[in-house]
Image 1: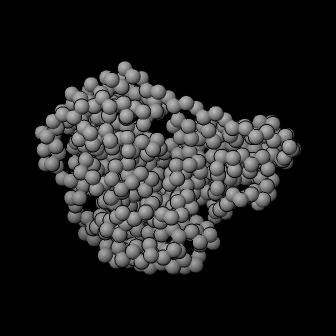
Image 2: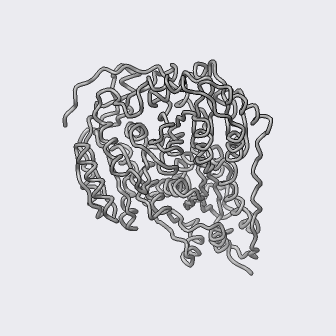
Image 3: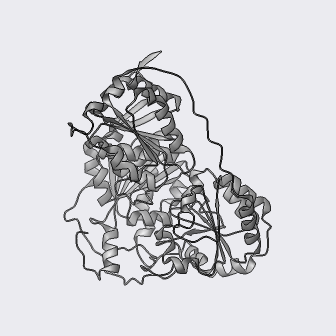
Length: 555
């Protein structure tokens, strides 16, 4: 049976179970779009290609499936780059399909030609330029397999226009699933022996636990052995924040109890964490006098940032089950008694006002089916510290790349991935200005995303860093003039309201969640509020910056 390359591309998407794609057309990808119009696959036309990439990312993180974004050649393809880098550093399975100029024009600086495979090589798990039409179907199938197998990540397929229009014999086929990578039994036994001897063990949960759908296996191990648990930013939700075993988030802006536990532990069982610099602080101090057991699907992560005593690669679910089977509960009373002397994650941080806004959300969303997405900055850290995430895939945030503008389009993708859930986007005023035009996409497709914008008329985290690192020599961190985000939303036909107290925010969110329509809430917060605690640059994980209270700025 002969089909055009474009028809085969759409056929393979259907084979892979794709129901929704996000994209923006252009000349080099138009044959694909022409074929797509005959397909039941839903296409969401975004306001910008970056929005398409972030939406595909949010779709993937919320669902555990592969997200798909589409762009044309040249500027369309390059506009995907930030989104692909975001997905790459956070190990999100995304397939990006880009159009390319005809094969004979490649390398001749043709109109809207760019070497997108060369550009994205460092920020994709793999990429392909398909020059032979006969290889198109299998290349696309391989792209999906690579995106989701092992350590997930983005894969790009660049398809010249004449490959999309070529007539090809279509052969139905499926790639065989790769068998799971088995952990080394001797290393697992060594880890069991170390855990059974530890007097002050801590489990550190990273985003890899959620990617592997291994959160229940991790919790069964901790519950059996009564081991305290801390989480990286990306691991939040793998264990409910309401559980007594959970000490909080660890890292640069981590909870004091969690960071102190890491500092005083004699054993760290790190599961699916890269030991990013924002997690460890000064690395030699971090690992001093500790047994480090590191579990990761990617062998390249072992000993990359922190030298592990025992490094184990392989299927995470299998490894955790083996550790649980071999683990023997023993008396950790003295360890828990010490932990109880440190401030818990419900303690106020300094005397800042902003945390109260985020704490006020908890009674509204507790036990609800929701998804929180964030941009990057102070609001992201306040959300991580104070919003109590209960389940895996409930918090979607840009961890590795720290991408401003991620939150709103990611919420759009997450909402479409899980229509019975309610996606709530949290942004600062700076990040929201970057991709706020996706409100048009949200409005035109009636996607019931709730967008909360924390407005301090500035770049709050930049101001905080200039306070700490540059002796308050502020520059390029204050945004003169006021932007009314509610009126901005109204321009797209979306309703909203202004609030300036935690109680008003809780009331507004309750109202918004009762409606099946998009809604924007603008929150006025104090520009001088700082995220506390904050680990001092270059120091240990529990060496904190001392802040001096500043007078409130009034508008």
